[in-house]
Every structure is written in C-alpha cells, then in structure tokens.
Image (cartoon, rainbow, N blue to C red):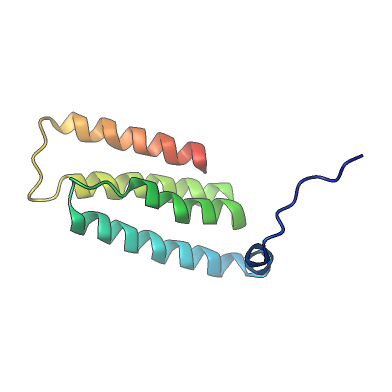
Length: 110
C-alpha cells in the first residue's frame, strides 16, 4: 500500500513545530498589515487575494474555526475599505454583495 502524500519542504517542518499561538499572532499581524494596505491603496486596486495568505496559514497550522474568523474579518475589512471617504459606490448593496462574494471565497479556501 502506498504511503500518503506528505510535503517535504523544510520550512513546513519548522513551521509545524511552532506553537499555534505564534502562528495565530503572525497571521493576525499579517492580516492587519494587508487590511491597512488595502485601505491605503483605495478601492481601485483589490488586495483580496492577499488576505488568503494568513487565512491559509491559520487553517493549516491552527484550525478551521480560527480561519473562519479570519475569513469573516477579511470580508469586513474589505467592505470597510470600500466605504472609504473618497470612494464612490453606485449602490451600497453592491459593496455588500462583493463582500459576501469575498467571504464565500475565503471560507471555501479555509
């Protein structure tokens, strides 16, 4: 019988040995950095895909529930950034719809 597939990356072995608390803190800091950058660059440039980095980190090393919390937080951060003072939105429901789509995407990944 064949052995199950295992990743052989050395960084993965080191990260696996790291405590879940440190991974959670690192992912939270990365999330806040991405959220700040997302707000700073404005609504014309989407950084939504970069929110997946801390979500995947937490889902892989910590657990699904924390990843779900981070997914909801990333959708909320994106929606807040879309209502920035210089932002023109044709209808507020458009931002809500886009936030739900971002949430759905990140939850599927988590």
